[in-house]
Image (cartoon, rainbow, N blue to C red; front, side, top):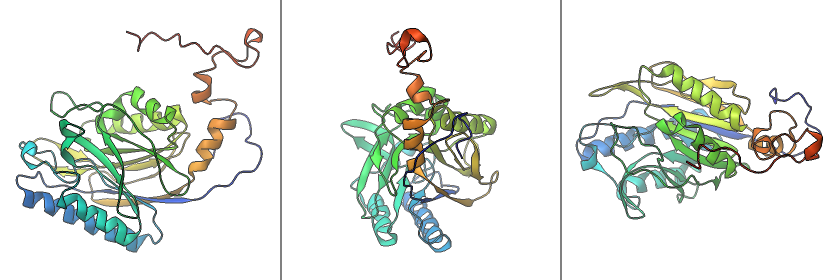
Length: 303
């Protein structure tokens, strides 16, 4: 599996398989809270399908804007994390015994108004992770930019981070999630045409450049302004697509992944261990005695 290294991985270590299901569906561009609840109905129905079709699924991932769509008045249909719409998702996760990833547009998160937010609900029906999109899509998305990229323990040894759609066009966000300890980065998206090739390129780069599993769910359908192409995919730490949904159709994909392998790669891999090499530049040179230059010489972020 670790085709990105010239050196063999040695030793023994335990891994568990985490079963992941991603959906791609067409959300309604909500005009009313009734529309929002119709979108919640759709997600709940997909969750039932996933649990029935793939017994033992650990993690269910839905797409960006899954509750409200991306309509012209979405600011009028914001939800609260302690509101009834999110409670329905909590109840379903508990009933099915699965972790779930959802993307509501939230009225208020930590005093910030109008936040594009990814949440993870555990198998007990508790919100264990909140992430506000750090790079809202300009100029079309008037949401408050996020302020951190947290990592949370998930099922089967996973350490989960979420990013949202346009976030994935910025290498910094992937690296932020990985450097915070993520071994699985989940990208929920409402990514539209004509950027289906960019979608594939950025997902592959995020996986390969950070040696992590990447799990993505993208919308399908056509709204007031855009068409959404789908192509939800799950990728291995070397950037290989494990499975992929088709273009434009409502669909489910499923894969078993092994998060502890990522931890071992970051710990032991010799070549292409970018997380280590970034902090230990030139370690092969005799002047650095296998340790390397640890000072950050890059100026991009200092500016």
